[in-house]
Length: 332
Image (cartoon, rainbow, N blue to C red; front, side, top):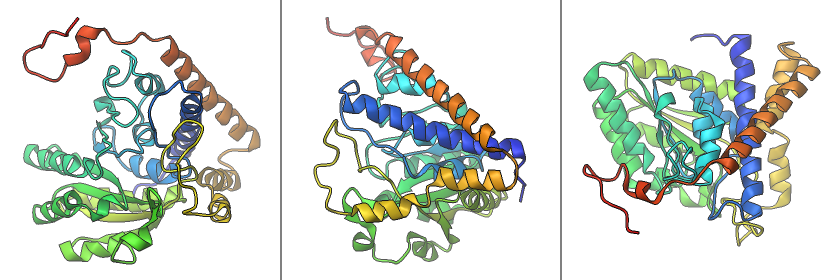
């Protein structure tokens, strides 16, 4: 397995901070009514996103899900076009057509996300098939939640990937809940990874709050996939600190599905704080370095927010772009 340089471990922390501060800024906009509709944050899940994405190359593929901001950030996407997309601006990563749950940035291999549960899994599987047919050597990574692991696209994709030995990594972000239902009440096995045996592929449990553990497990799976040995199913145990979705000032309508004590217990293993301690202990960074890095990332997020607010909205005539082979005139 490749080893991480100090430069890459610092980049890991930077990307984790980008996700945290970007999502905090987005949640603030949503609470003020600046960002319409619900949105989903990855606050608490930064380690599993970044650890997995940094096991890939820039040309490898990745698909996310409705909890969508963190995945392209973890893959290396620029913050300004992502923030602009949240506000539906023409400078957005999808030119304002997608919004919070539909981000894509092909320049870093991010094929997009969707609010449809499990929808990204067959897309990643198709990308892996394309890689195999073209002999490009690219690997696909599919992020999905524990709820999606109960859906047909998960089982169909895993079966096809196993039969054809496709270069893909299936990563279940097992944050304990499908909206407000505990995954332990909704899944027939103790771990999502237990389902791998039915498709004769490796199934591995990973501590999702440990970015290095996720990076190692994903790197092993990526190397296996690139060598033609087929898919791996990773069951990454993590936790979201905020509600399933942000709905302005009220959050989720139902808050009785978990206790504040449970949230506080998970916050003791905050993935960012845990990794900062690792870097401090290794003397990769000192306290001043960590503070400066946080300030740098906060400036990035602030600049992205200013860029998004100042960007123009798309013209009406652009509404039908990228939908049909022949352009359809907009109604005036």
